[in-house]
Every structure is written in C-alpha cells, then in structure tokens.
Length: 412
Image 1: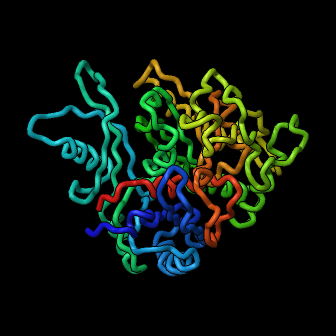
Image 2: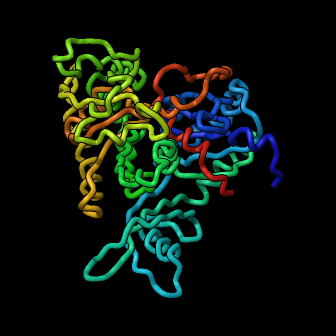
Image 3: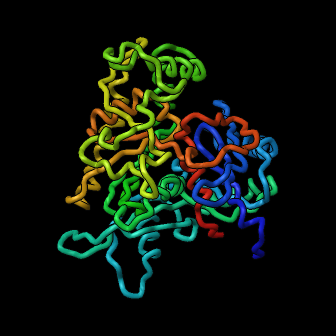
C-alpha cells in the first residue's frame, strides 16, 4: 500500500448506514480536524423496512451525495447497522488447544443458526467471572454474517469505492469520544452511551475508552410513529410529523411552554460553566483535560424532568416504560460485573435524542447525570464545503457513528 500526502491529510470517507438515513463524513488530522466533506440522505419510508429496496436506494443515491459533498479519494470505512449485528455477552471457559474465537463461534452457531464459517466475529474480554464455581471469561461478542458484509462491500464497489474498514456501529459510536478520554486516570470514569435511533436504541457502557457492556434494544422512534399510526389512523409520514409536534405538550408544565434553547433541538442547558451542574459530584468527567472548561462535544446538559405519559390522544406509557426498563437492566448487568463502579455520566447520541422529552424522561427515571453528545463540535468547519442534508452550527448528536469511523482502523 502506498503512503503519501493524500492519505496523511484526510481520513477515508466514513459511511454510516443508519435505519433512517445514510451519512458520510471525511475529516483531516489534528486536535481540531478540518471538515473536508459531509452529507446526509434520508432513506425513504417505503424502503426503510425492506432490505432490497434499501440497498437499491443506496446504489442510486450514494454516488450523488458523494458528488454533492465533494468527497475526496476512493477509500471508505463503514459501519454495519446494529439491527444487522448480533451482539451478545457470553462467558467462555478457555480450553487448551481451542482458540477463543472457535469457542465463541460454537456458542453463536446455536444462537444465530449460522455455520461458524458464515460469520465474522469480533470479541473483547470484559473481566474474569465465576459461574458454578468455575473461572470463566466474560466476553462481548459482535457477529455479522459474511453475506451481509459482502453485500455492503459489493454495493460500494459499484460506487467506485474500496472498503478498507468494516466496523460495528457500537464501537464506532464510542470512538467518537476518544478525545475526552486521553489521560490514564480517565479509565476511572464510567460512561453510559445511549444512542436513540429511529430503528432502535443502542446502549454501551465504557470505563474510559474500554467497552465493558453493549446491547441493542429494538425500540426506537419508529415504534412511537407506529403507535401514532394505530391510534390516529394516519400514514407513517403524518405520524412522524405529529410526533415532532408533541415536544411542548410532553414537557413538564413547569417549563411554561418555553421554546428549546436551540431551534429544533432538545431543550438543553448549553455552555455548562461548571461541571457541578451535572450532579453527583462527578464534575471531572465533563472537563476537557487538555484545557479549562467543558469538552466542546459535551457542552449540553440534559436535566431530568417529569414528562406527561399522554399527549395528543396518545398513551405513551408502555413504550416509555419499555425503554427505561431495558436500560435499567443494562445498568444492573454492568453493576453485577463491577459492583464498585457507578455510572458517572450518560451521553445521549442518535437522531432521536433531539426529542428532549424522551431524554429527560430517561434521565429522570435512571437518576444519572447526563449530557447530549455533539461529536461534530470539535471539528474545524471554517472552510467547510457544502454539506448536503447537514446543517452546521447546530448540535448534531446523530453523527457519533460517522465521527467515530473517521478514527477507526483500516482493517481490511
């Protein structure tokens, strides 16, 4: 492989195939990397739940958005969606003469119904555990069928791109915040990432940069939309539009109907001057260790608020309880592995975290200090070209996976 000025100055184009849109991003190098290219294209509702139609949409529109965003080069790093990735915590008893991957694939075969040769597996050790008086290793395993990987590789080949890295969106998401975990003592900070997407919700818990827990919860924005479709007898487009108008009616009346501080974004306390506002004596976790103040990507606090469980003729109780119950189970699982560690902060990312009432409800129930992640905030956009589909100058929590991919290894 040739190494030259071109590859040193910019990342491969990072492509996030999300459930509701496809995003691409290319950045430069340095502590404040310049934004070189960015663009987003929504996936039509008619294609979102049908893989063949979704790939046809990608094939037709990805070259166009690449041209409009003026992407440079032909190298690409991609994330396979969580809905197409099997994520499982498992305990293995290491056996002499049998590799760890073989043990994991043997367990996955029974759970996925796919031959070991048909999956790509990535695993990481979490900690030592004891089960039935037997010493074992707690592992997080990510498995993707080879057919799925090759379908994305073939798609991008048609778009004249060479895939040089394939990653899970969970690992890409947490990598977007590596810059706030640079010091050795950052390993003492326990962070829960909550990625609220249209198709589902990802939960990851890290100690510093190290992933210690991961789970995909198949409940997201589309399930609220479907509830509205059923209740109001409308189509999915009208349902989403209706859901986005519920912001004020779902907020605590104590807010007096005040508008969001950033138009169209969550009602968040921007520019936190003192990290003490995030509570529980965890002021250090929000501070950018390279200088004074709060890290630019974590400057929006999310305060817990009581939200109404009904609005616009809708009863949201079941879905709200499902989300908070599932996240609570994630916290309990982590605490079972690490009884001495509490969650220092939650970071909300994903497009649905724009729904401030949902974030605030989760924070209220879980009682954790929280912030909205804005991964694009650390980029230098002063000379940014046109960014079709992306509005700069606003918090963009939905771009965590794409940002993380820009720093991900090229492993193919």
